[in-house]
Image 1: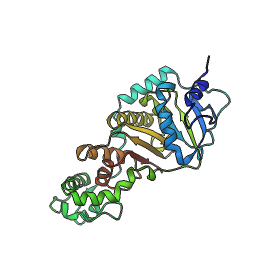
Image 2: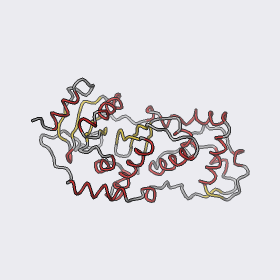
Image 3: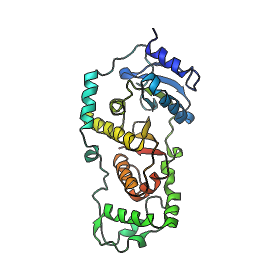
Image 4: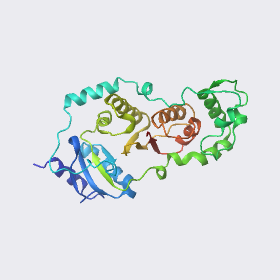
Length: 286
């Protein structure tokens, strides 16, 4: 009978993953070495297409910062089924957006501050102060930015100018590329359960990890957002369904900024970008 590694190697035949070094990873995972860092997305797509055959979700990881990510001679036991079931149930019953909130969520905008918020974070956006000159102040930053975004949607020329400045954040060119890349095959095909193995600075405790697992499940269901890579302080997603301009993009932008504490663009800029790109980048660091 074929063992798990043999089955995976057999599934790799005829793909760019064929012949790469493969072995046991930490906590029941399988590691594939020799991934070309500049073709990591292609390698991940190959592995993602094989999930029905091998029953393991793929995740790109790096040993640039973690020497423990090495192929091991023997299989290391993973969590029990009961532990994973409890993890998934706790994740599903949680509200991740009570825990993940951007630090600017409760900012107030006073007189004289509108221009600052209307210029955005790229330094290249047009001055949109006139679009919200009639908004009563003081008001919440979220109220001001939503008014700006709604009025921007009604001006096709301005919207296109802003999009040209912000669309880079939803393109794979914006992704981080480590020096060394490994393909980690998780011992599950369940997206929510997969969060158990995701190492991320924004989810250092088990409680945070469960909330992150629920984010992964919600984003997969809503946007077909598939986790491609985890680089410790960074997560990278391939998105199959772009949020439509308006309420969808606004909601998705708020969630992305809540998880990505180091995304410098304003929420209205992120909302514009999300409707025109298929690659999401989350950066959460000290």
